[in-house]
Length: 68
Image (cartoon, rainbow, N blue to C red; front, side):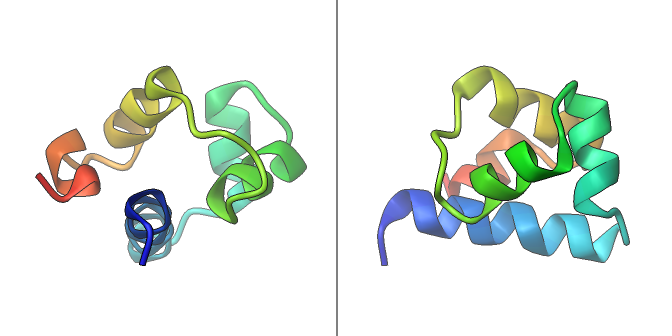
């Protein structure tokens, strides 16, 4: 499995654990639900800045998301 795919799965898992919707995270990140969906499903690039914001919103250490 590709490294970025693993990161996206960890993000999705953390989102579901918090019971956050894609719409909620998109709003928190300043983007639409559709844009967030594209990131989570690998159809759009996951930028470092977005990853850092996600780790804060999801209250997960970024190293946990990266599997470091």
